[in-house]
Every structure is written in C-alpha cells, then in structure tokens.
Length: 372
Ligand SMILES: [Zn+2]
Image (cartoon, rainbow, N blue to C red; front, side, top):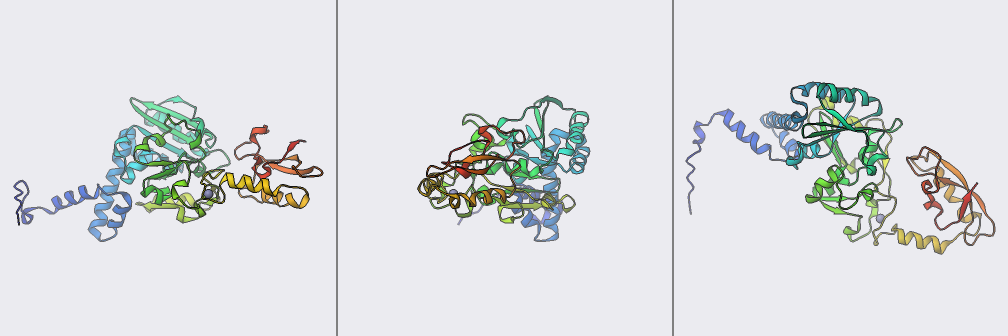
C-alpha cells in the first residue's frame, strides 16, 4: 500500500464547477474526433463540452491563416461549397497538430474559384505565387493557385468544369490523403486503414518520386506505413482490389463525422455520381487479378475469331463512368485469320485528340492494332 500526496490540487469539495469543466475540456481535447463525438453523445454536459472543444480546435487550426477574418473566410468557404483537405483535416481529427499551421489546402468546385480567390487575396492578404500544381495531381485539377503570406502557404484547387470536387480528393496520392472537411464536419476514406496507420499508394502516388514530398503525402510517412499495393494483406484482395471501381454512395469506404449539421459533411455526397479506383493494375501476387496472372490469361486464351473478342467492346461501351473518347482501331490477334474493327478507349482525363500513349489498350492487351 502507498499513498500519494498532491499538494498543488485543491480538495474536490473546494473546486468550482468551471474548474472541473476546464479540466474535462483539456482531457477531451486529447481525443481523436471519433471518440470526441462519441463521448459528446453521452449526456448534456459532455455534449456542450465536446462542442466547445471542437469549436476551439477548429479555430486553432484556421486562425493562423484567417486571423480576425475567420468568419468572412468561413462564410466564403460555405458559400462556394468549398472543402479543406490535407494536414489541417488531420489536425482536426486529433492527429498531427504540429504540421497544421503551415499549409492550408482548399478545394472548390470550378464555379467557386473566383470567389475564394478574392477572399484569399483581398480579405486574408495572401499573395499568389504559383499557378502550377504538382504533376502527380495536376490531371485532376482544373484551376490551381498557391499563395503565401509570411511563412504560411494556402493552396486553392478547383475541380474541372465537368467534374466533381471529390474527383480531386479521390485522386490523392495515398488513401491517407483522401480526406476533407467542411465547416460542419469531416470525412475520410478507407477508415480501417487510416486507424491502422496504413496508407495505400494510388495511381497518382506512383508519380511522386520516392525522395520527394507531395503535400500531406510526404508529411504523413512517419506516422503511416506506406504500402505500394495490397500485398501486405498476404491474401487475395477481394473487394479491396485496387482495380475495383467504387461509388461514393457506398458508405463502407468512408467515415463521416459531423459537429454542425448546418454545414454537414454528408451534403457533399448528395445527388452525385462519382466513382473511383485506386489503381489500374493490381500487383498483389495472391490476387487473381494480379497483372501477371491477367497477362498469362490473355496469352493462354489468345484470340482467333469474332467470338473471342466480341464481349470486350460491350465491356468498353457500358463501362461506368463512360469513356469520354473511343476511337476505332484494327484488331489483329496473334491467332486471328483476319483483322477486326474494334473500339479503343482513351484514358480518363484526356480531352484532346489522343496520342498512342493515351489509349487504354489493356482491354486489347497482347493484341496488335493500328490507326484507322
Ligand atoms: Zn487485387
């Protein structure tokens, strides 16, 4: 048996209610956002305390950028249906507080760009320093600006005219970067991997050199175990296969937390039709869709007549989301006795006349074709 004498603390009977609240708020501020909102649902006092902690955390993250203009900035963000992504969201989640104060990454729909640009330059007093996004993510961004004020950086990225803002999020270099917040809540994709400290590289992550950082991708490498593919599962990928398309309506791929339903994060998913996949190829040798397995299948099957190839045009035409461009090519399989005219899809995101590199020829893998 032993006893502890805490001389600097008052006996509980002499502590005021406000002091209890302060201590409770300090403890709550150590929690990650999911635990914080869960505990806020236990009673009225915890609800008030939880809301207070969330509001304070939100202000703490954004005030270094917006100062006294925070209300105007938040109003512009809401009005323009803008989102925040990157390290600020991780700080809001209760992770990575240290890196929150340098960069603020804002995303807006194409039509919301001018309004946010005005606010950042004229209200917040930042100066535009670049219009060039990192090549790895540039393809999913319509308009880009980078701003600076003293040692702080803001980036503003607008989606393409005909695309949703989520296309930018879901083309992030790793699963741990697929996260965003509104002024009323936050959302992150692949929550199970996130909680396990695992980040899976996506097709755009392949474009980031190993020794270079890309936004939050570089910052999180210390906290997250980076995986190039699903091989770490030591089993077949099943529905985690990076080649599978997912729709944003499938709630199991994301976790949303709201603290203000007036600007709920779930409104982002209302009435939209966005699909994504992590990669074009699977490199997990345990998976039947592994590219080495797939290429062997093609080799064995070969193609010698119309029946061998007729299902592929249908697969191409009914693919969702549809290919924006299809060109005609001549298919001449290794075992074919004569050539066939076939559709060849152009890779997503190419809206100008395609070059050979732009063709999505995996459908006609190991086949010979030529331009018409
Ligand atoms: Zn797979």
